[in-house]
Length: 351
Image 1 (cartoon, rainbow, N blue to C red):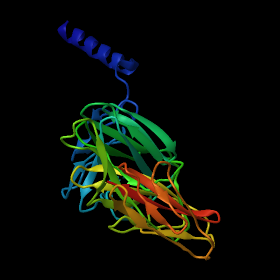
Image 2 (tube, one colour):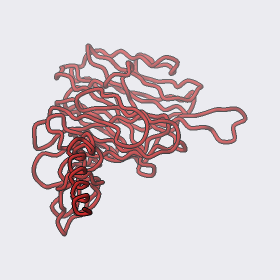
Image 3 (cartoon, rainbow, N blue to C red):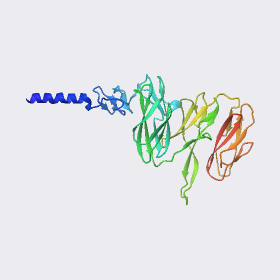
Image 4 (spheres, one colour):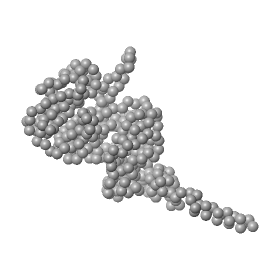
């Protein structure tokens, strides 16, 4: 009788599990892990069961370790960088992979960070970004771009970047949200806050600037300072040197700056225009002056066309020869030189 009852109970549990008692392991039920051979969701962080996005778990070789759901080691292509740095790719040395920038970063509490993604080695129809862990929100602005908006407070966030074409290809982006750090921005930006326009082959120097509180001030006060020691990168590819000077390519680009001591990132977008005979550049591209100080700017125009100058509102003054006089208030201001339909921008940091 006991044997018969045990058999009946076993049959009951088999039928119950087959009738939807447990949902099958998939990308929907195991988004931050992988599915093992028995159909169970694993964390995907072990060498014997490594993976993300609900894909079948991989077994890493003896020379590899499992990191962020990828087998990393002597056979791995991880850690490659667009423009020379800090992007991350999915594991394996061959086959399509998801590449992101940045792959890890710190975000100021309540701040924002632009994320970039693409598929390399395969069809790239875009990358979808989703919150896998932690708070905040995402806004997808293009097939390969999303902006992460951090919530208030201190937290850890994990974002999953997944190929639209092949959802088995994915990559984690790890973010730390900090309420104690001060954000910085990349300058210059377009006066209309759209992408900066540059002709192919032209050069533009970028800089990092931060608004910081003046210590021991009797009333709340702040000043704008330059950020030194930044690392510079270009997405998806391009040429930028250690001083932040970009040589524009033939396609649109995104310039990233990273502060090594905090792992804070910031970016600016560049739209590359068709070659124009009135290509123009300003020297110096970035200047730091005291309040009321003077900087002589020079516009270089390939065609020799006439140049007109103007400065951002309340940003001081500039005359017809490019002599800039700073205002008596600190800030970051843009001076624009225009020749025909082309223009260039110089960033002035007034301290």
